[in-house]
Image (cartoon, rainbow, N blue to C red; front, side, top):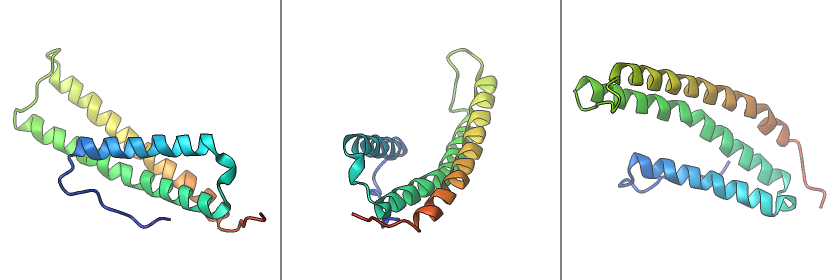
Length: 123
C-alpha cells in the first residue's frame, strides 16, 4: 500500500468526499487508458489501497449518520415533504446498510490482495 497523506485540515467533509470520488474516477481512467502497464506490485498496491478505502467507509458513513441525528435532535433539520422522522429513518437505515456493505467489500477484496503478493512481473 502507498504511504497515506492527510488532506489539509481546512477541507470540509464534502470537499474530502469529492476528492475521494475524484481519485477513484482518476484510477478508473488510468486503468482504462493503459491497463497493460500495471505490474503485479502495482496491482497489489492498488488493491490494498482500495481495501483500505473500503475499510474506512463504515466509519465515515456512521459518523455522517450520527451528525445528522444530532442535528435532528437539536431541531436544526427539516424535511421539504414534512416527513422528517421518516426521511431520517430512511437515511440512517441506508447509511447502516452501506456501512455493512463496505465492510463486506473490504473482506471480499483482501484475498485478492493476499494472492497478488505471490505474483511477479516476467517482463
